[in-house]
Amino acid sequence: DIVMTQSPDSLAVSPGERATINCKSSQSVLYSSNNKNHLAWYQQKPGQPPKLLIYWASTRESGVPDRFTGSGSGTDFTLTISSLQAEDVALYYCQQYYTTPFTFGGGTKVEIK
Amino acid sequence: QIQLQQSGPGLVKPSQTLSLTCAISGDTVSSISAAWTWIRQSPSRGLEWLGRTYYRSKWYNDYGVSVKSRITINPDASKNQFSLQLNSVSPDDTAVYYCARTLGPGFDYWGRGTLVTVSS
Image (cartoon, rainbow over all chains, first blue to last red):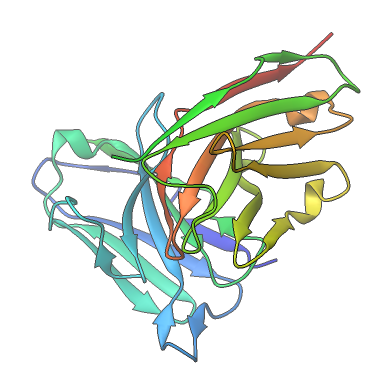
């Protein structure tokens, strides 16, 4: 199985400041046939299912604010929230869909400082 | 508007079978683009992909290694839904269970989740 490791486990950021979440996969999720990274990011708020934010490592899902940016390739990925808003307080997960079993990171809790 | 409506019991006794259903609206379980998936979430296991069913001229299933000997995911085209059966459950199977859709890149639609507690 591909192991997804996120860091940090939690972070507290002042409103308007940048939040950065890292995700590392135990093997590359860059698929040579389409030259795409099979990596997604989700946001989860209490009592709700995860919400897809980013796929192909850097493509925003429709309706996702442009303060959310995904980057990285191969085994190292980053989700950046450029200017943290109160509504961004949540858990964030990365997930690989390169191969089954699809696997998720352990999550990063983002709070307001 | 795609919606996934989950149903099933929230309490299952140890050694019995956990059964959940996910009814689909706005898409079809027989879609040749989609895969229909069960995922669970618990404090001890985090988010865990359990398996999927999908139709590409015929039906296919994939299952997660940790549950492979105990799980069945079945599509029901006549009712436009799919189901999860997990046999011989233990307290370790206590979790919130979600159904979800994928078109390939990520899971874009999710059910609301069902908390299933395994307890006598």
